Amino acid sequence: MMEWKMGKALKVLSLVLVSLALVFGTGIEADAKKKKKKIELTEEENALFDKWEVKPKKRAKTVKDMRKKPKYVGAVKCNGSCHDAYYQAWTKSPHGGTFNLLKPGERKEAKLRVKLDPEKDYTTTPLCLRCHTTGYRQKGGFKPAGSKSKKGKDTASKIDPEEPNKEQVGCEMCHAVAGGSQFRAVMKASKGNFTKAETEHYGQRWDYANVCTRCHTHDKTPFKPEVHDKYKFNFEERKLKVHKIADYWNEDNADQKLEKKDDRAKEVGQTEKTPLLIEDFKITDKGKLKFKKGTKPYNSKKKTFNYK
Ligand code: HEC
Ligand code: HEC
Ligand code: HEC
Image (tube, rainbow, N blue to C red; front, top):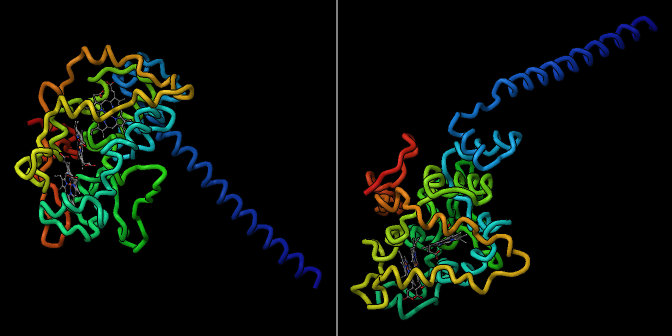
């Protein structure tokens, strides 16, 4: 009896030992794999980091974000500890409230004029979402109510009325080619000490007068200049209304003033010399928004930019 018990105890013990060895064994292997995967920086990347005085420890993580395919991150991320005055001003600006125009009862007269139903809820209508939200139907972009993953999980973007984000026309609709994730990493790493060319390489655009036509006067907007004089688009006049930041500087965000802005203004970016393509799109028979081939400003396979 006693012997049998001993035998069983030994068996159990050896089982435990074997499983421990397995667990730790694979742990060590995984560690080794991680070490092998260590990111090698290119000469160009290291040169940029030297210029921006990025600590060696931080380089691998930053370069990972810069190399990943661009995606939309939302205005709240641009605020963070970097662009508070711009963000606060934006929430009160016309672009910080564009989603709300899609709700029933909003701007009845304007909707009636273009034969839209003023009592209809357009907050999930693909056509409207393209120009009234951030990055709709693109990586990381806004997802309307009712959006589901293949497994049926709710993937709709959370909307917080206190903190406007991807549901409005955010920063990235004017500043990004295909989302701001890459150049956000550049901005953080360089602490604002970057040139136009450097962020253009990572998907920022400086062709402001051009980018407005993603929406204003675009072939697909119901609110065309022919409909009403107020939809005529004079860039120089309108530009002045985009960032009314003057009243939004305070003690807490004073250190976020852009020291290199004037230097950058002297530089002419590639996107200013050769403006990027403006997307055209259609609504398919299934009611989905599809960008037309040959009109996209970024080719994510080839990682190239497409100019007009
Ligand atoms: C191609 C882009 C585009 C599409 C598509 C689009 N809009 Fe707009 N919308 C705009 C722009 C740009 C303005 C601002 C025009 C201006 O003030 O010059 C605007 C303005 C509006 C306004 C305010 C008009 C006013 O005079 O007060 C409403 C309401 C509106 N859109 C609703 C919608 C709805 C509903 C849809 C979908 C059926 C839609 N939009 C589709 C670009 C678009
Ligand atoms: C409707 C388009 C539009 C949107 C939306 C927009 N911007 Fe801008 N932004 C511009 C234009 C045009 C300029 C250049 C004129 C100016 O400085 O006012 C600019 C300039 C800037 C600059 C100065 C850049 C430099 O170095 O010269 C910063 C910073 C900036 N925007 C941040 C933001 C942030 C943060 C948001 C979102 C909270 C945002 N923008 C949303 C159009 C836009
Ligand atoms: C992604 C679509 C989109 C882009 C890109 C865009 N806008 Fe708009 N813009 C809108 C919509 C939608 C409205 C309507 C807001 C409203 O009527 O409340 C609007 C309204 C405005 C208004 C307010 C109109 C008024 O007088 O009250 C100004 C000014 C303006 N845009 C300037 C610009 C400029 C300048 C650019 C380019 C740098 C630009 N927009 C790019 C969608 C866009």
